[in-house]
Length: 239
Image (cartoon, rainbow, N blue to C red; front, side, top):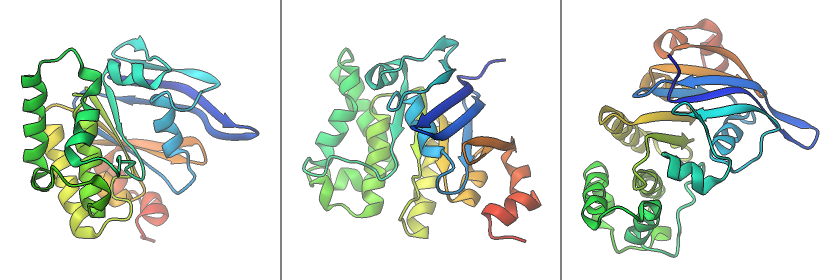
């Protein structure tokens, strides 16, 4: 059975540099799937290609069995949302305004439906409700990451892309955010997680892909990869 998202033989180049080289992966509906790899492996390029932020030279991306549009706004309208690396929240705007921007693609939805989803993201991240009128740029790093995830959720996606959500955060904050990601998935939302923190990613996800210099070099059940000696040596600090 085809996955919710199907990436087939995807190639992305930046000039003479091949960032993704015939990458193929399948994301089943309802699962958390992680992509792990070292810095520069092509993880963020993969996310950007799915979101229509960078062009790909060959290959296909399908969502719900149909070719995915190549323009970012159309991708979001199709049901995919991204919480980007580095958060990229709108610092001069308030928490509320950031969330309202996240809901903008839902212009046809009722105010009640949008309010219900805002209440839901506040139940996931109560600190955001406490800081609803605060400028986003004055939030802590952990709170900004919560806002980035919440903003992505406000478009009511079928697939949530998360690019390095643990980057630069203290371990206790990472634990809190990953706990909420599990709760989000339990509501039925499919998640594609790109993470340098391989252990956290493999503990959270059901399946995983290992990306190395633009190629998928290994894939499988996350718990099995967690005990793989090669993965442990390369990404988990093992021997």
